[in-house]
Image 1 (tube, helix red, strand yellow):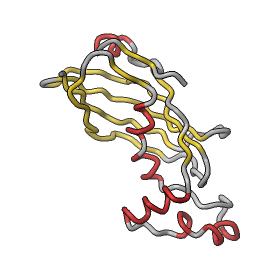
Image 2 (cartoon, rainbow, N blue to C red; image 1 turned 60 degrees about the horizontal axis):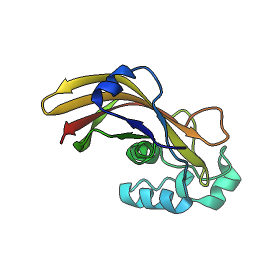
Image 3 (spheres, one colour; image 1 turned 90 degrees about the vertical axis):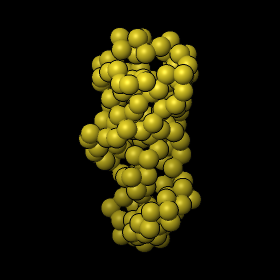
Image 4 (tube, rainbow, N blue to C red; image 1 turned 45 degrees about the vertical axis):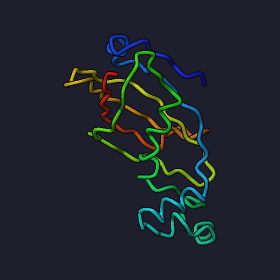
Length: 155
């Protein structure tokens, strides 16, 4: 999908409550899942043991860690929305609510949908509370619904 450009923070404030962007699809490979398992020391078989998952898992395949899906939100959203107003930096400020509503089988593709819920001024910039829905291609139920907070600092 084409990236949505927002002129400035004032325009973003006018879009509160409306979906403002849909990101590009990203394939969740077994290699990515294995790398996340290694980085977090979360080696549960449902993530790494392909053969056992084929035999025993209700999902029929290995699945991504929920926190892998959550950690990809910054990447998934960068292909959805851009500001023409210069921003010196953006930081992840936190999350208010996160739900992992459907597993992401290895080989699936995911993307993010973004809706600003609140935009407020903070010293040196703005704080944006977003609803981000991470959907799975060809599935009715999303992988993750998260309310995340970012801070954008003026250039």
